[in-house]
Structure formats: C-alpha cells, structure tokens
Image 1 (cartoon, rainbow, N blue to C red):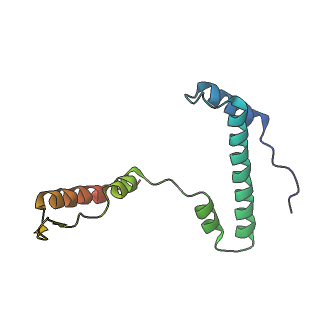
Image 2: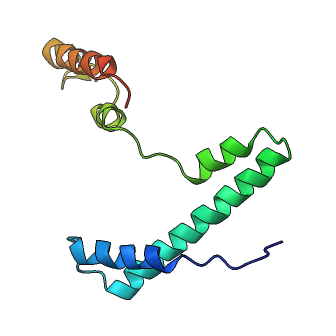
Image 3: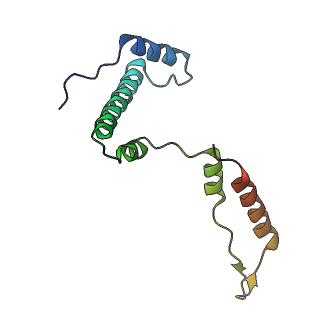
Length: 121
C-alpha cells in the first residue's frame, strides 16, 4: 500500500536541470531529460522501500531483488573477455584437411590469460 506520492525534492530537480545544461547530450530536450531522471529516481526509491520491507520482515532474498532489478554494468574486463570470445577452433581447408593456425590460437590464449589476470573492478 502506497501511503504518499514519490516526488523528487526541488533541489534534486534543479540539479538535474544543471546536469542537463552541462551535459553534452543536447539532442534530448530538457523536459524529457528531467522526466526520465525523475522516473528512474522514483523507481529507485520504490525499489529501496521494497528492499527495506523485505529486510525488516526477515526475507533473505531482499538483496537479490536489488541485484536483479539494478544489475551493475559489466566491467571493462568482462566486456573485453566477452569481445574476445571463445578460443578459435582449427579451420578446415578446401581439401578437408585441418588447418591449425597456432599463431592465432596462441595469441588468443595470451590475451585471455592477460585479461583474466587483471583484477576485477
């Protein structure tokens, strides 16, 4: 049961306006920009209220709710590993012979090992 409307404080709306004026994303008009920010802020407020209720009720899954509804974007390391993809497979030549490009496979392995060695952000 919602007891009061979720309305952003005027100072926050003013900050969003200032952010818009200083942003490089001028192709978005001010009103839609503020409306989008307000909608996200309101959704964040509601999510936090739901997590608080679940936490107070002793429901251990409250942190999973936040994790699934506000996932963190993948780190640069995760993006690089995804872009690298799986290890290349040996190719088949026109005669059906297997062509093993050891140089490419070794480079791929070295890059993957280097990326995996980087600390997680």
